[in-house]
Figure 1 (cartoon, helix red, strand yellow):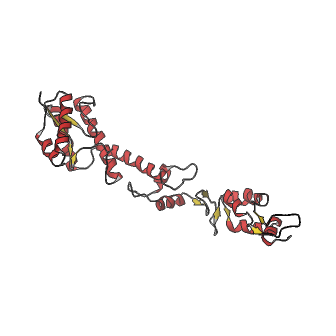
Figure 2 (tube, rainbow, N blue to C red):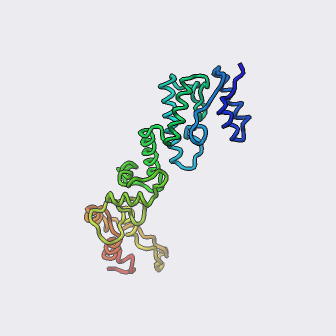
Length: 272
């Protein structure tokens, strides 16, 4: 049997500039299914694709994937189980001499010419999942216990592909989180106050006395000294006020270091 392409498919294939290769591949598919003529489901821009190919925007990719899944479901309902007889690599193909398949394909094309989405519920679910993935995949680290769903609920009607880090930061601020001034850890500050909030680790790092030159001793002491966190000095503050407020503050840490014997000695080089 000599397989051929449906006339409308021939016209569309010719527009792509690779008509011979495309046509031959489709004819081989047609012969493999023992069809006399093969056709592909069309949308407003050409062949209905599966969403795994290149698209200008992520929103277009999600819409294509949703429409492809809905179209396959329609073929399943009207023409039997989906398999090699209906879907190809990224395209929906069918027997051009099968009245049921032709009717489904024409209904799909007609729907897409009137409205860009075949199944709103499926599309909304895919778009929602893609936005959650977009938030969770951003360089911004979310607080412990907070996921993309939580952030998305705080955003007002965002568009897929247009969620910025600034929008996520604003959403987290609206949820009561404040970012540490020195790292990307998010803190839940209980009371608003002026100052630079710090997480526990950064507060201890802030308490490190500066590296300074000291006069070598007669016994060969080193001229450089490296400061270490004043953990004992700062622990009461971190376990007390800072724990209650949800953050330490740089101003507090510096004041405590200056007021302690260890800090005073490290800063001014003599006993307090």
